[in-house]
Length: 428
Image: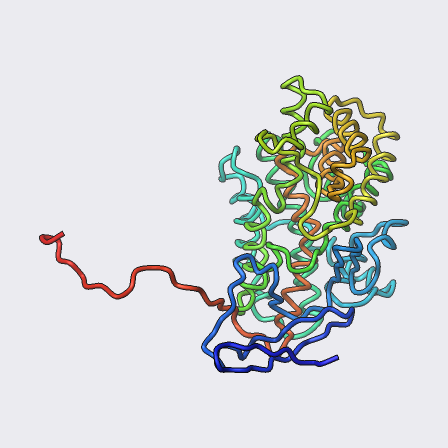
């Protein structure tokens, strides 16, 4: 097979190198195309453009494959440990026990917020959007911790990564408590990562929230399954900002802003809001699926299908099993959950959805699980951000460690006015 592609343009013939990834993916290298021909390429959403080489995550959407550092996502489900997955993504290999213990200890030591930051959060509007507060607070961390501005070695980087992962969880819980008028609950060093988050969210001064193993496992799975997903919108944002050599906090704060959008991290919110509209509107699941198949009907069915996966989303398979297990053990009674289960049952038996591979995706099940755990709808995307943070950090570091990395500066196809003269005010 040739390792070059040939482009014919006018009377020019240009040979372009073909890069082949470790899983056989091929990419035409056009990095010198403009210099050689004066041409650029046009790819509005970058859906056909590889902007980097990465060793973090591999996805095959046609086969429904997702791997972190080569490990299939399904292999993290038996004893889900979010911190182990975070280490794997950030440092490129599974940690030894001593390394995981050290990393966990660093998270415990960094769980508290500077009292100045707590005061800052308390002075933000109580009804402010949680993702806005989260992004602002993460950006502000650079004011309290200057270390990530100049990390000189692996130990300093590990400390900075642990600090950000730990404090994001505390900030998230703090902003929630602020929104509902409850006192801030300090982290408990005896609790694991997910349990500590729920403790800070739901405990009250005279009664600690009880986190069962089933609840903790479900939250761990949600965090793990969202930890990285290749060059998605928020990860690409972290890389764009990081390409200017901006610090890790600034890059992750920008990624949080990208994740906030309803087409990205807000998708599981859309699922629950859709279920609420169905419930309050008195629609049956059968009516909803009929409306979804009618192109003339404006009704949108959220939580089915995926832009990348043309097969069953591997994360959705895992969360479906978790959803059935957790809801069964918790004996949750919720009309929205009943509607969701019925939608799923009917859609999976309907050839319209099956033939088009419109299976329930990760957003469908994660929204249902988070709701069953008592997480408010406006905190769903915040939980997504907590899970995705190790991916952002790993991608940011990979980019900074790449000696060939340059500041990202896309081209454009200009469609504005051609040259024209300035017209003085009195002649307009």
